[in-house]
View 1 (cartoon, rainbow, N blue to C red):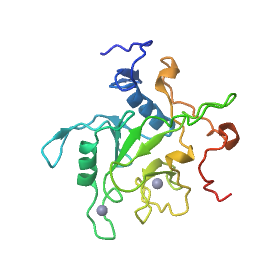
View 2: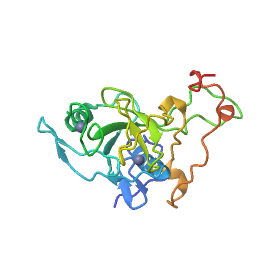
View 3: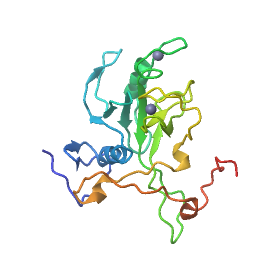
View 4: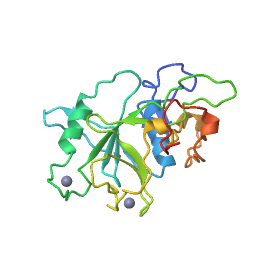
Length: 221
Ligand SMILES: [Zn+2]
Ligand SMILES: [Zn+2]
């Protein structure tokens, strides 16, 4: 077992962090595990070493077995994502419409990023660091959505038809969220003082709490 230095002032990328029964390679990975738990998303950590088409071995961070989705957690800065990109291209489906894959459009690959940084400091307001941030390694934006049929939270792209990755229900009428919408709360595993029950995320911060975001109101205000 790798010990966890509680007071180390080091990069979130470098500190092995215990969360639940797993020692993660970094605090950011542990935070992503806590965030997945907080959204009721089942995950497996480093379940499979994959041989990419180029022959390179690749060990992605998370597999979401109910969603057919991989998550590779990448720290701040401009990370190297060549392997993640190759995984995404390899596992995406090649169906001509309609897609007949178990997972709509094939397996999906998401890049898990550090939570959104505060873009300004306002006295008396909570910092804007409490929201999950993600990208795709190539291609379209990924949107967070909750399926009305099976209640599973997940990420999809706008490739139609928009179907739940778990139960294939249509999601055409559901609200989609981007990272900038600041809807998906990001859970910091290390603030839990070793008690890793299911995190209670509570309600998202309100617009009033957050102040102006600088982004247009997606509801059309
Ligand atoms: Zn397909
Ligand atoms: Zn569903």
